[in-house]
Image 1 (cartoon, rainbow, N blue to C red):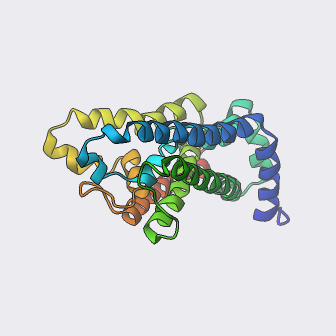
Image 2: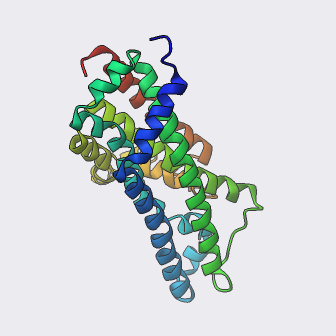
Image 3: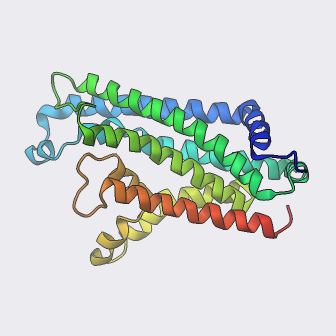
Length: 260
């Protein structure tokens, strides 16, 4: 068993990851949503720019709006992370995986290396493409932003980090719950249902709680100048990363302590 290393397990997980059709479909959907919806959003803003209220023009952010497609792509990457682990539970192949790699932590580490590496590359490429496309659409009518600005570059990079963190969060939930439908339900609830619940809370509570929502954290990460009721970009990144770490650690401990 000493021959079983993280490198060998990672190689095996990479083979499984790239040969599963749902993985390819998931990344294609991520690209289409980020670019397609980003183009629709920026085109709509360009078309209505002249009639837009002066206050909205003053607070307009050409970066976060061009990355608007990520707010839909986040569900695609979450499902990719979830299915990467739950597909093995549904097929029963997780028993074979754990039998071949008795050190269960190695399995988790190897899967995370593959998932995070691939998602980070795809996410960064697509968010940079969406940003450049959005600025091209805005050009001549709507104020644009340049990657020469440190704040702009940070926002675009963190857009890719946001998608990567959500894919990892999905993986953690899938590992913890083991069932695809349950994990997807919880993941979707965190992004959609929780904000609705917070919306019905007293106004004094909303301001304090909303900034901790994953979707609000993502918006802060991709905003050049986050609003006063949101965290700063780097603080939002740390908060979201802490969520992900907690879920992954909890799910890993659970995997080690219970049967497959």
